[in-house]
Image 1 (tube, rainbow, N blue to C red):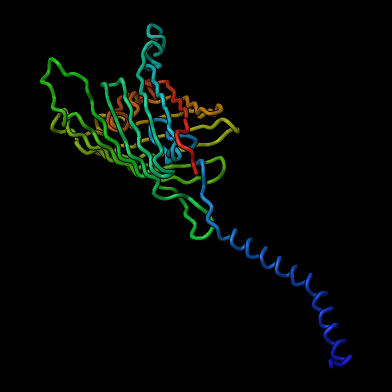
Image 2 (image 1 turned 120 degrees about the vertical axis):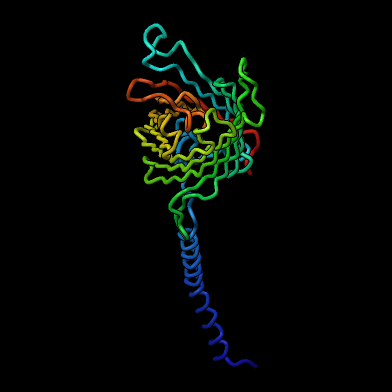
Length: 301
């Protein structure tokens, strides 16, 4: 038979376990909470909305449409402001580009467009290779790679007709951007434009430029933007101007409306990098706008 003292010891042990159980549960909960907080603190956080749209002004930003998102973009340039009252200060003239961009993934996008200038068709592939982030192994900047092609379909009559191959122009860019604060973003754009055909022997088939852009948020829905492309020394830099543009981003619901002033008439790299002729400070300024609308074609999982 079990002695009375043994029963008392067993009963006391059970009572002690019952008394300590709540403390053990609280300790376990505390450990779980600390583990969750540690995991959260080590989680990488990516920076978003470095720029509001896929374009800064003339050129691309690091942004791409999200997976399954289709972006319809209308770009418009009037004539130069110094064209005088007869041309209604440029408003009687117009150059337009219509474009479609699609996000194959959150990091990879493709696009096509058609410009009235030289009746040009263009296409591009855009890949977001590196994203600015904080947390473990933080990344100080984002890098997006861009490759474009453009073909002019303008007739050259009465001059000898050019071959299809000679009508192509290609451009390659590394878009490097950093969002320094919720209000300020900067971007650098090393650029190469290759032209299969040039008019004169002294002209360059390969044109190198370095671009810089900035976005300063002024209010919740308004931001100031600026963009500049510097042509590296060569025949092209001697004959043409550096592209300069200033503008405003206006967010209106599902639209991003961009108003700007630039000395470049063309709206793709083929035109505004190696073929800008206007002197911004002499009044050769084209007033224009970009307006974009996104459509979600495929649900994101």
